[in-house]
Image 1 (cartoon, rainbow, N blue to C red):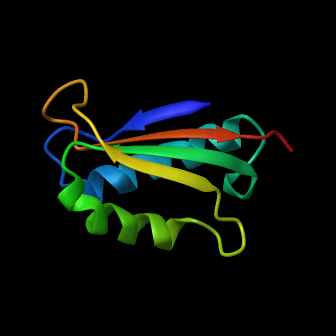
Image 2 (cartoon, rainbow, N blue to C red):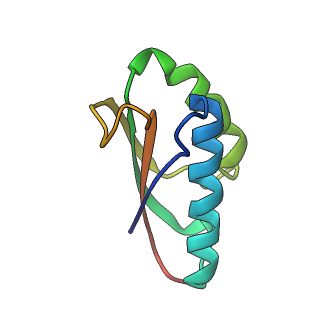
Length: 92
């Protein structure tokens, strides 16, 4: 399992891209990839930004390998964080 947040000062779109790029890196380091993701939780500081996050998500997730996902609104560690992605994946 890995949890990632974006870089402070970035938009929701850019923070989502940053999170998912880091997820890719961590999965590769563990010898697996995003086709092996079992579940995802995404927390947004403001649920009205769902569409911005979801556009990045839809472009990133491989067709035919969409994992179970829950998305909600929550206060994150600092106001600078707009999105947090928590991923659970299986090893190959």
